[in-house]
Structure formats: structure tokens, C-alpha cells
Image (cartoon, rainbow, N blue to C red; front, side, top):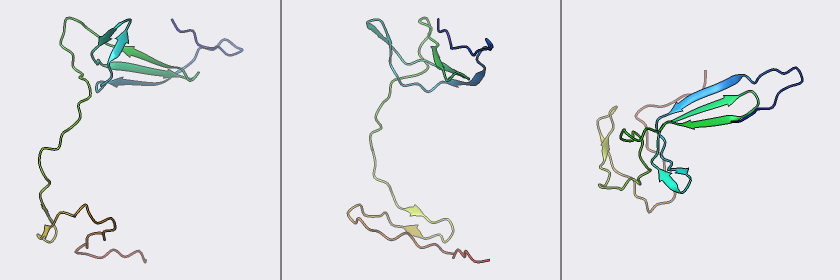
Length: 111
């Protein structure tokens, strides 16, 4: 149990934030065992304390999963400019200084 600091007039800390995280990718350590990622409830209070509660149920399959690196499986194809209908060629990664693409309209900053 966590006991928070109290002020001189024995006021209890006020809940200042609460969120439910369903996208956790962290493996949870419980003793010597590693548990799969699970949903988390995070609470913060006026004393600056952040409490994390994990929701785990061993009889159900996990709804969160560990982080997986995304592999590039295809090369990006040229896109079509929706305004002018022209094809925009892919930029070459070999040039370090490239000019921004031209817009089919102009932007004025004067009033």
C-alpha cells in the first residue's frame, strides 16, 4: 500500500488524472517470471504520485502483445497529385539537399 504525504490540515490528495492504456507492449516482471503485456490503469494525484495498476487474467488470452519491429516489404510507388492529376516521382535518397515540391497554387502572406 502506498501512503501519500499529507498537508498540515490533513487534506487527502486529489485525483488529478486517470487513463486506461490498452496498447502496452511492456513485459511485466512478477518475481522471476515474465508476464505478457496487459492493459494498465494509471492514476495521478495532487501530490505528484503516479500509480500503475495492471489488469491480468490468466484464464483469458492476452489482448496486448510485445513490440514487433515492422519490416519493409515493398518499395514505395509514385503517388498522384490529387490537385493537378500529375504523377509525383519518388525522391532519391542519395541527394542530401532537395528542393520542396512545387505546389499548383501560390500562398500569399500579405493582407
